[in-house]
Length: 419
Image (tube, rainbow, N blue to C red):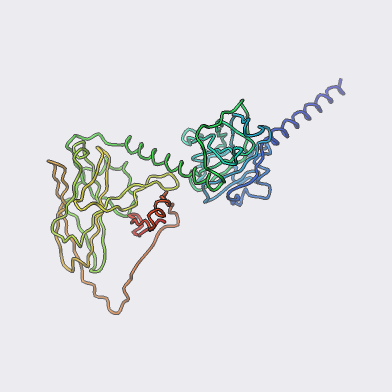
């Protein structure tokens, strides 16, 4: 009896071992677009460790059996499925990724996961995508992230977009569910580089739509004829969520101080009701020469971390008009050229007009004469922060027009050129 039990136990061990080997052999990693670079979990076995069937416990980013990237996104992982057969006979299924969420350490699951399949002609096409909802996942824990795959052949490319500064994976699994169905849309994606570009365009579009949707959902319910103006700190983060607390604090006087030869800036927030949305909004400054004052709208853009930030300064047209949506704030940036004004006090009025609605805010510019002796004038000053995130921009547009795309930055006081 003991001998039989021993034999049964040995058989179970053999079966389990063969199943584990089979699962690991079904899927292999053949390459990375960017080598893993997070030191605490990076080693020479990274390609094998993603499909070895061994799961790391939380926190996975300090375990050598995991793979991690810091300050790198997006990342492409080339995969080979050994059990699916040729591309003309693809399989449907689920690609499962074992990741982790630890917000205290700045670690989150990927923002977007795209999967591309290589056809017989060598071209790659999108066959699966997922946008994990981090808010629904438990913090300080590991998580399986599932991507439903429409069609999988032998060669796949997995693209991960970081939700922050890090991406960590511990395991990738493939589970077949039946016959696949090839996407109808043709594809011109020939290599990993073009796949990364395509996936980045998809990520940018999704983030922009989500940001616009969030802004509209946060729109204030205002009377039709409402028009509110407030003083916005030009050097702090602009957060539309604060509007309900500040919109009734219209400044009694705008004060600008500086030395001759400088440029000084102010920022005003504006929110209106349906009347302003229908008829538009016009801004006019009286009392100062047009050469001394420039008007801009502070526009929102999507940073690569997915956050909607107000940063580029876009010049208003010669009539000083805004297009606004009811209950959604806009931000006016005013640049004063103190050299064009000269020393002394200069009084002005900022008038906001939307059909019958008119609001006027008075202001004064106080300029001290520059009395420095023998000091070389600065021609340009550029500065930024180490934590700055790049913004998505259209490189193709710059090349098409054969010129640099120039825009100003409200947050950093710099001029940027996108090529």
